[in-house]
Length: 420
Image (cartoon, rainbow, N blue to C red; front, side):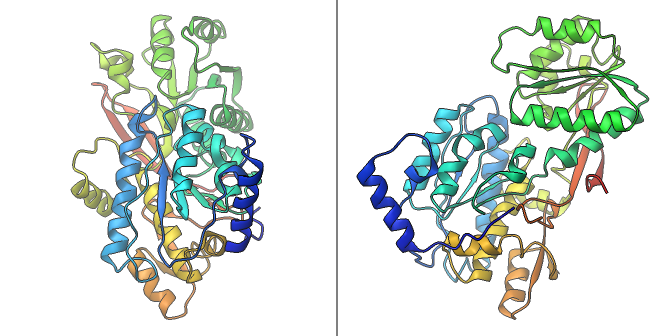
């Protein structure tokens, strides 16, 4: 639950002086606290993957953030001032690097940080950001961990919890007629959370889970994991991973439990047009038939058209809409609060996404706010309808597959509201 978070510049200034006097203990968010004065200018930064195993998720999120800022500034900015150029930071797929980047971005005096992309990277610095009284919003953190995280009311996400994705993934597996399934997942908050949620959904639907195993994502060999799957004799396997999943999929294919023999499924961490060429560079069609689920990335045609015009070099759009909505929601909250103080506008983040007059753009929503009306911002990723925990209460989930040539295709999208 988000608690009361109104903080004054005096408190933050005192915290900064205390830290300066005592020195950093190397762990918590208080070490990053800086004196922050309300100046009427909304300053944003990001910690997103410019390098590392999730680098393919960086460009769509970074460009979508910049596009959102352009749209906002073209409409007159926030609090009648343009949002300045974004302060950048690389999460790099390494907790230490992500934390250092967050410290550097915080030191620049930002009011909000977008990121990280990976749940594990956000956990590496969330205490630094929220402890400094700065808003953090991720467009791609899906680990259930964040729902009840003690963030002081400063952490938000526009990506749905895996509690919402898992029922759709289970439905896809069961809809294909599989009744004995193996689950393998990376041993981190993302992997464990989605594995447990998917197992629960499968078992509630009467499907036997033959294997539910986590693995070290930094391992160099996954032969033992592949053998466990093969020995379980499943008729389907769900692989919850990031880039290392290409090596696992290679092993499954070589062991005779690939997409040509049994059902093979992935989730958002494996949704990439480049996956078939990583798994089988000379024969991408070997991944044909694999399916998976992910928060929808391309369901808003007009947004996709505009983003591609803004950044024509983009190949992937995964989580780009969700980041756009992070930025827009922050901007609208600042407009509602009439303040760029994160301790003030964070209290409006949930409210601007529900229980008001519907609006679908920053300009239209701000006009309603100017007329004294409550707003319900429906984003380019769909209705947000934030819960008290600062996350979507429903989600549009994409079902994807790889065709006979190994090309990524969207099968359909579904709205998930979890258990109803």
